[in-house]
Length: 249
Image (cartoon, rainbow, N blue to C red; front, side, top):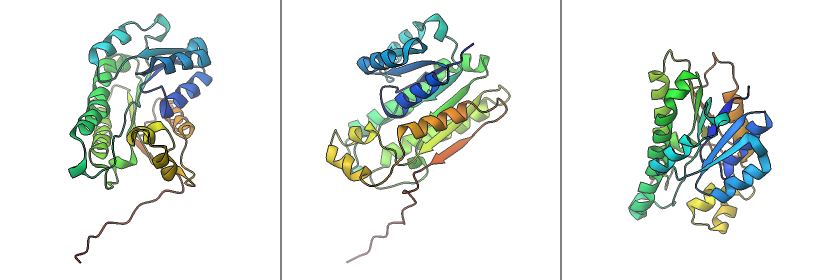
């Protein structure tokens, strides 16, 4: 019998690539996201093994309606991939918009924990797995990362807390922390600025969404007794920046 995975934020980037990877391997895939037309396109591409559930992850009521409406063959969820998330803006904290901060917290933190909480009973019953998508920004601060990095640090710590609380339940929990990866993420962060996108990725040989999808697949298909606690992944072209030093004139 095919296993079932729910992937939040499946309309682009990591999420769409992960949906394709798991369908290819014979899984049933539930993909969630705000853009119903993108989910419909994935359904047309991937067929009956894919079910799209359109809702905004910050809307708990819509989330519950979508979960209650899952078709019979998709109700038993074995793996949850908390992928939905975003960054908004690159300005330092004093110039950042508060609305950007609250949107990131609502999506990356509140939405993630809400979905997780609603699915936990079934995941415990099925001895399933939770894969949370954090970021290298959880480990390595940079100017302009402020609240985005903080939300991903929360995801990382929440993953560790879940591992502790689910001790003895047979549920696996992993935090995956990608570095530079080419996707719509940067267009969203920069308000659709293609020049900023091109400047960031030009010549960088960045990670691609399918690299992260392959990593998620590897983590989720390890033997039941193996838990990958956390996994930080960067392109070879990316390494650690030096500390900043401000000097008086």
